Image (cartoon, protein in one colour):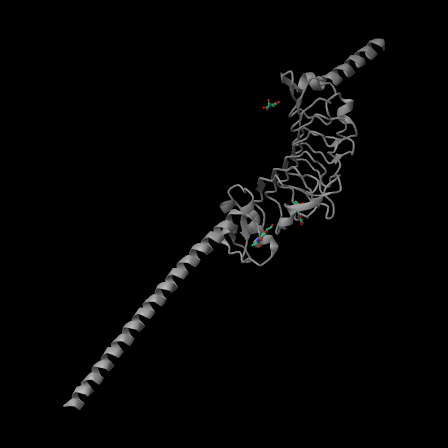
Length: 327
Ligand SMILES: *[C@@H]1O[C@H](CO)[C@@H](O)[C@H](O)[C@H]1NC(C)=O
Ligand SMILES: *[C@@H]1O[C@H](CO)[C@@H](O)[C@H](O)[C@H]1NC(C)=O
Ligand SMILES: *[C@@H]1O[C@H](CO)[C@@H](O)[C@H](O)[C@H]1NC(C)=O
């Protein structure tokens, strides 16, 4: 009996360490690779010196409150949870991860996220939510409250609408990936909006830094706003990739389509296409001006010539008559 208890105890001990010794590799003391290990929980025996933990391709479905704190993983800077089955993340799951900079949640089963879920991550700059099922974004409030975020992947998340408030609480975003979603239209205000900042003074705080915006692979309905956005931001391969779904179900590049400007203030932007258009209009103006000036000149010349000829003929005739009279 005692022997059995000892054996059982040893087995339990082995089980506890097992996750790390058998399934996790330490290519370097700072990096632990626990991918493809059939884990259903965050491992509890990773060395606390680790800065990068790779938990890709496991069966983790739930992140409980303080799960990283409990497992002594507070130093980590990069956390890869891609391709698990995460469906639920408790509000305080990420508490204590004050150094985390990159969080990969690609390929999970996330639907609606609490906007303050990532607020404990004071240094996070990179977040991927690609390949999830984020069905609806909140309409009136911002989507995620992460002031430090620079890069956000929302590709293939079945997003069908963006709202003016969506990116309001992520003013430092430089790269947004929204490719392969279900977007039809977009409002320029989504990406450039004057917001009331936390000090209660007005400031142009929202997305001043946006540089890369991937909107490809969406069933766009082309309009001037889309045209403007396509030309204002650096869309990767925008001519070929940003295709518009036409009523006859064909696809055309957004830049092939004519955009009729209204006197709408939204059209007052300093985008390249705008200055190109102004330049083209200027050149066209000069050409038309020159053409009409030369037409007028020729007309006047012809007229002068004709009048002169008439005058000559008339004076010739009168002189002739005078001679006849003299005769
Ligand atoms: C992590 O380990 C898996 C196999 O367990 C391997 O396929 C993968 O290449 C490793 N990744 C890195 C970055 O070492
Ligand atoms: C994506 O969203 C649309 C509605 O916008 C819905 O009809 C469709 O079923 C969703 N697709 C998936 C895979 O959830
Ligand atoms: C564009 O906006 C600026 C101020 O933002 C204004 O000074 C300028 O007159 C506007 N131009 C046109 C053509 O509306």
